[in-house]
Image 1 (cartoon, rainbow over the protein chains, first blue to last red):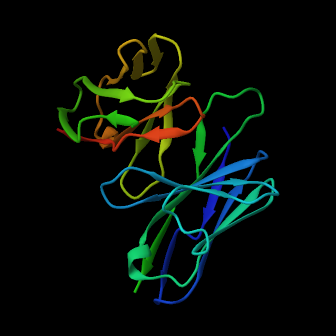
Image 2 (cartoon, rainbow over the protein chains, first blue to last red):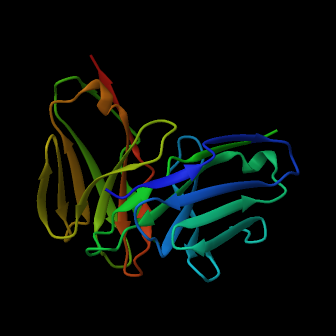
Length: 118
Length: 109
């Protein structure tokens, strides 16, 4: 099956610093990747849809200047949490669809990145 | 508004069968998905239903009734490793995925 790799898996940073999370599709080309945030005991919350070569589409309530998304190639999307604060501490997960061979809608998820802002 | 409802938590015994229900109200329907998520890990795909009926995949089966806005995930021969959260998600008319809050399944020996 399709593989999505996310890095780093865990990051601890000081308040005010920026953190970059990478999401790679290892064996397929992902024109669209999705970034989610998940707080403890809550469901996935879609933050933005990342399209290769164009600006990301952000969900209502998500600050695009705070959560910078770059999708420079068909296999890489990055999420940068700028000027992170403790309330940004969360589990961030990326996902992608492999549309080759037909759309089943299945999402392939990265391993997730647990961000802790001190 | 769009809504996905599933029980918050369920408990079952190892070796038994458990059914996790999901009801939905969405603007349009383009498929329903079940994902498994172990604590601290990303979700993994379990099943996809777009037509009414039962889809069987090993110990796991998923059922869909579009007229009732209802699905269930059936897990047979439960194993301790099945302890996880099970997420129901519906793709709406805009092909947006609407996620349920997940059902935490606790398996007891």
